[in-house]
Length: 225
Image 1: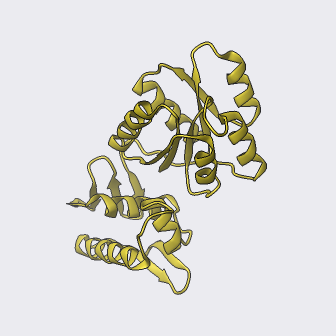
Image 2: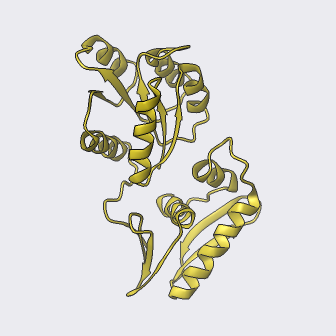
């Protein structure tokens, strides 16, 4: 899951980034409304954490703009305690939830999971299953019929993406945007390397699950009977 934080308090944004990364989310953070808008319009994020009081463009205007552009990414507003009018304005403009500052880490993580569940995303507590394989995203372990092995982080993130998309084709561009970010220097061969690593590990486990290449389109996860 990739989250965009739009928060002008740099220390708070950095703290949120570390918390979310420790909980296995991919995170980007920007500190003004215009940068937040530019990033949000890319459509690559699964969730936005959006402050209301921002330089360049306030959070309400940003939210109104992305909704007008058809961006349906879930949004949790970060509001000052007691600012009821801001909360109402945000919800009316299309926010999915809000959390008032100061907030606890546990509350924020619970609200993120709840919003993603409401939007139909799979938010695994213990792991993901597909065919005869199971991925533990917390422990970075892949198991199949009693055998298991350790993955590196990028392998786990790539397999998680393919499993969440089930049998939909995922392009190399989508993989790069989700795993490295839309402004990264990653190239197609980076994706091919990690696909190769995963294929070898699935074969080692004797899994019936295959990563199939759809020439000119991308990759799809299939369970071969």
